[in-house]
Structure formats: structure tokens, C-alpha cells
Length: 413
Image 1 (spheres, one colour):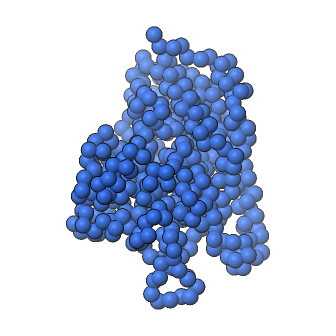
Image 2 (cartoon, rainbow, N blue to C red):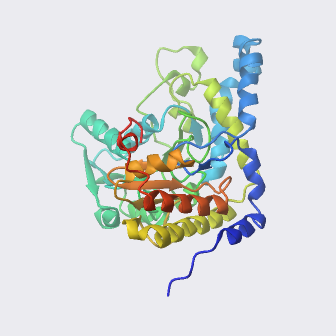
Image 3 (tube, helix red, strand yellow):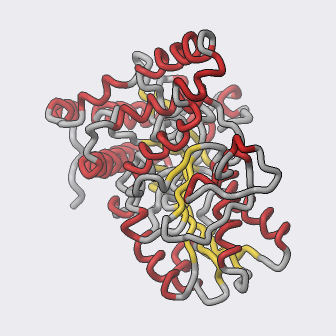
């Protein structure tokens, strides 16, 4: 017999005993809003506003160009990279921040293909984020003779073969939350001479990652989701230091060994620094640098335990109260095999999500029929989970979603 769901008082007691509860105070969250969309855009840590204001007023407006050296702007991308390295299990000087996740993925794939010139296949899966597939397809078209092979997520291990140059996967499926076995897949790939390129967009800041420990070759990620760097904040790239021959296909002047020598010929910088391209946005980089300070003192193992517990609670509450309306869990029922968001198949899902947002519960919708809720344990409480499920049940029971303005599709879902 299934266990009954906890009541709100039990959830409040869990929050009172939560050793991570104090971290919530680091974030600027609107009063009265249950924000379960940090897997798309994280809220700002409170200290970010003052940091960006200071960069504008002092480093830019007063000190102007001298801040490239005086304020350390020129090294900022690598310093911020080291902050992220600590969250993804990477050694110092192996992560650099800048450009978008798509641009960084192009660099990683291009480098991987160059290291395996006799292998024509980029292997990926149907659960990968479409943007990643587009980058791979575009690069394959440019290279000529390279093709992208797409298999179902469960078939990845078997599909790795000696014609595969690299395995390109998103560790956490952006729709279902399914978690790939990074260690097992990387081990299998290496046994057959393949390289790995991991997308950590839904991993970094959501669960412990150990790119060095599993031997990942490349990894990319964004910083505006669980890392709370702000809309459009710069992405990052990890290059395993053991890949001495890895070369970025985008050779920009920030990746030069001596940019201010202004040589006509490109000489790559050592290590991951070569994977920089052009001048970065210092305002965005400074906001991200400050945002990442919210992770100081965070136990990632404890974060993961809380995430699993809260995701399981959300699924249990929603299925108990909403199953009669055709709402079903998407992805694995084993929550240790999931990331930190929970999606449900839901008839009229787009309109349902709009009605939820109108009642102060913010998630998002992913085609064709999924309503999706991000669980960011640094600031999400158990009572938030309980209340969100209760409001979803009300929206469905009252058919509150059945309004023309909720059905009207917007450009961003």
C-alpha cells in the first residue's frame, strides 16, 4: 500500500530542522511567490545588485580602462572558472567562463573531432537538448564526412563503437530529469577510444558532479539556472588537462598565449585558456562571480539529499491529488536516477501552467505536454512544495486553466 503524503505541518517541521534553511536568505525572492523555475532562470543572490552597481560606478565610470589590470578584469573569466570548477569536481585551471553554452559546445566538439580524425560519428541521444543537436549538426555539415547519430537514451551504451569520435550527452534530461551514468558511459567510451563531451546545464549546482573523477574529456554548461548568474550569463567549458593536444576550432585573441603582443599568427595559450575567444562582458562576469559566492560553505552531498527528498515529495503529492486529471510522472521513479527537476505529463499542460503562474506558482512548460518544476534546495522549502501541489490540484479541479488567455501561446514557454 502506498504511503500517505505528509501534511503541511510535517513539511513545516522539516523546514525548521533543515540544516540548509539559512541559505534561502542569500536570495532575493518575491514575497508570496513559489518559484519552481530555477532550472530555467535562478533568482539573484542579494549581493549581486551591489556588486554590479559597484563595478559600474567605480571600476567602469571612475577607473575606466585601468580596471582591466587594477580590478583584475582580464583574469576574471579564469577566476570565475575556478569557482565553477569546485562545483563540478574539476581541478583548478581547467574551467574557463565566457561565451554561450552553444559556442562552448562547438569548441568542445570541434576539438574532439580533431583528436579523432579517423572517426566520423558524434553519438548523442534523443533526450539531448535540441540546441546541442543543432550545434552538432551544424559542425558536421561544416566538417564534411562527419555525421550525428541519435539513439534513445537507454541505447547509448550499446551504440558506442569504434567509429564514434565523441559521445555528446546532457547529463540530466531537460524534460524528464533522467540522469545519465556519467562514470559508466565515460568508462565505456574510453575503452573503445572515444572521447566524451558532457552538457552540465541541469547538473551544475543541482547535484554533485565529478568530471575529473570520472575522466570526462570535455564539459560545458550554462550559469543562469542553478548557478543564478542572471539572464544570459556566460557559459563555461571544462577541458581535461590530460588532453594536451586539444585545440579550440575558434581561435580568438583572448585564447592567444600573449594577446597584447598583437602577433599576426595565433599561438595558443596553455590549457583551457586557449578556449577563450573574444572580449567578455565584464558586467555579466562580475554578476556571476558574486552569485557564485552563495555556494560558499554548501555541502553538495547534503544538497543532493535534500533535492532527492523534495523531488520525491513533489511527485508523491501531485500524483495523489492530481492523478484523476490525467497527470502522470515523466521520467524514472527512482529519484536517485534523476536530476533536480520534476516533470509531469499533463493534458492541456501549457494552459495549466499559465493558470498556475497566475496563482503565484512559477514553473514552465515543455512540449508536447509536460509541466516542469525545478527544485533548487538552496532556497526551496518543503512548504513551497506542499503549497505548489495543492494549488495545482485546485487549478485542475476548478478547470481554472480553461480560459482563452491561458491557452494563448507566448513566444517563451
